[in-house]
Amino acid sequence: MNIGLIGLPKSGKTTIFNTLTGQSAEISEYVSQKAEPNVAVVEVLDERLAKLAQMYRPKRPIYATIQFVDFVGLTAGAAGQGVFSSEGMQMIKNADALSIVARNFDDEVISQTYGDPDPLAELDTITTELLLADQIVAERRLERIRADLLRGKKTPVLQNEEQLVRRVVNQLSEAQPVRTLELTPDDHKVLSGFQFLSAKPVFVLLNSSEDNYGDSGETLTAIEEYYPVVEFAGNFEMELSRLEDQEEREAFMQDFGIHASARTRLTTFAYHTLGYISFFTVGPDEVRAWTIRKGETAVDAAGVVHSDLARGFIRAEVFSYDDLVECGSEKAVKAAGRLRVEGRSYLVQDGDIINVRFNV
Image: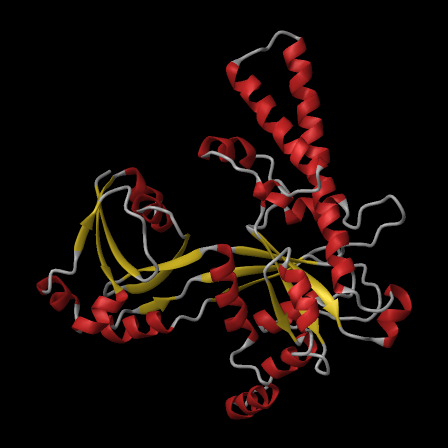
């Protein structure tokens, strides 16, 4: 999973990035000329994987991962200009999901240049920019299709694409994102190559200060009308994440009313919001967690592990993590009749342990 952190200048994207990843990317109250994004891969901590490692004692446990990309170098535009550079837009298109970081903290230096914090206005600016960027792409494609049709290239494929892209243009013209269009699987395949920004799953990180964290109920409610949202006290939690003493860190978290680390909270929130689940593969060499979207099949899961498994898929032997813990061993799961043989269309469930039988 690849999550892109986007936002207006000085919204605290890099602070959030450092909090989530444990890195020390440069932070400044002043304008930075850096154009390359900050990138880090973090493990998705899962108590189930730790338990499986205790039971199977593999050479190594491998956690699922999330790649966070902090898209720095995005500049505020003048009147009539976009807030993101063309280079920035292209990088953002490669993200699986977008997290908009909205500033909800006061800073004397930042406010002199960018004004007082207004999270809702920031979200409106960014949402409009994403929609406009998609509209430009869709309208240009529609113009090329029309030109081809006028030249006599009236193939069924091209005519179907024209109808679909026209629907996209109409949707964007009404200030509605592509992700809310009702699309068939074939439609999704056609549109996937466009990498529409408003087709991506989006959620909001409200970046509050230590002083107003937990007191932003009205703002959170207003944001929830449009996007899923979670609140962080970015700068405070970044400093908290750097404390080496575990007991001291937990004491501060308890005093501040934070029930889990920023990484754990965001990981859980992202999985739930974006519709991801985890399944496991187990054995003496490794016990591993894998990530897929809810609603994907056994053959999709096989393809995540290795393309050969999907290509030569025969069947999947499946049992649940909960059944394994209850029975105490894989042998006992089989004896209790809780190991199932599933075909290609089986919908994988969160916590499934899967062994794929294949032939290539």
